[in-house]
Length: 100
Image (tube, rainbow, N blue to C red; front, side, top):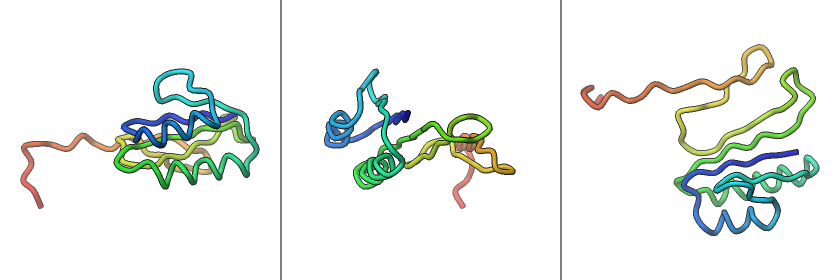
């Protein structure tokens, strides 16, 4: 099983994802595909995401039972710690800080 969540995605990408996956909520797509097809779909997302961002999670033989990857700018970013993928939050930029 795989899940793709997109934010600020162009309509063209949303339409393309709707061809392959079921859109269960706005911007949330679910389906069951092989690794090869999943990687191909994710490649299309990477080419078409533009200024938006996306995350894909899929069933995997890991300790958590899934793996995930992300594209685009988001405060959350995946990091690997001893083979376990966790989510790291980037700090909120301080609007009063001087630019460097």
